[in-house]
Image 1: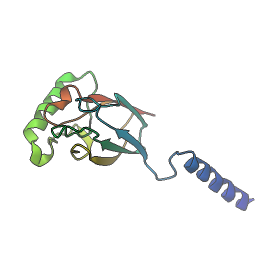
Image 2: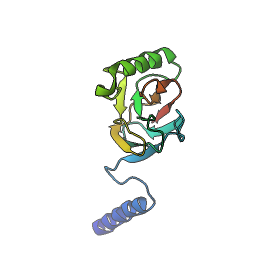
Image 3: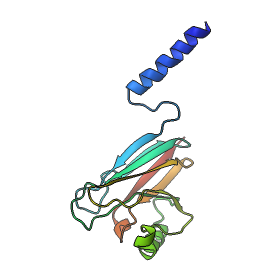
Length: 153
């Protein structure tokens, strides 16, 4: 009976892996890109399960050399424009030396800056259920290049 359970467990893990789902300990991946050379993300919403591991890959497909981008997850609600503005301005002040990431407790996770044609990534634990803002913190991009991150139970 024990052998049947072990074999059944292995079969389930194999089926999940073949179906493209996460296997025990594996993080789910989300790829986010700019819309060409525009200051916009191709994904306006990301949903993930609270407490799971998530990898966000910034795939900067832009071709304009001035279009560097990153992904920054904030502990800020989507309606809190004042907090997004405050963090966005602090990002500009943080500058290139800090990859436009301000020292602010609202910053939960971020990718390094990706120049056009580059990919960067970050792996983190999805925060508690709720809605959060994600944005690009490069030189004022936060005004247009942001989205809603939904953490679900």
